[in-house]
Image 1 (tube, rainbow, N blue to C red):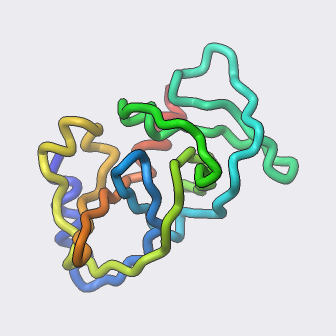
Image 2: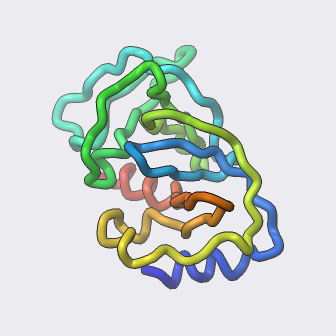
Image 3: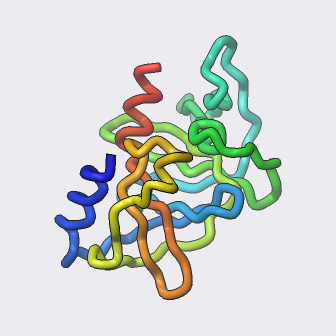
Length: 158
């Protein structure tokens, strides 16, 4: 569904976007910093019986129960082992709070809209195109920009 990511890229050429960058395996992903509530170390996760395989379970975050999603499994990628660098990125998408398991969080960057292009078909063959906003170009690397609204909405409906 390149039209969504193309229109996203075309409508933001002049804007400067702050993104939280994290890794899943060797791939780098970015999400809008305004959607990130906090980043926490991996706590104990309680498994939920009969939940989809991409739902790791739930955590208690200061008295609030948060569903935790494994993005590796959600995207059909090879699951990686948890390490000391593994984190949960807690996001708020239109009032829905969810935790995203990532291999590591590397940095916060600013990216001009003119450096965002539509998602190449080779990527959408591996990850549902509805989950992607585009690809961010930096000097020496590319970032896959996620559409958390679509990921979370589809997860909540499951």
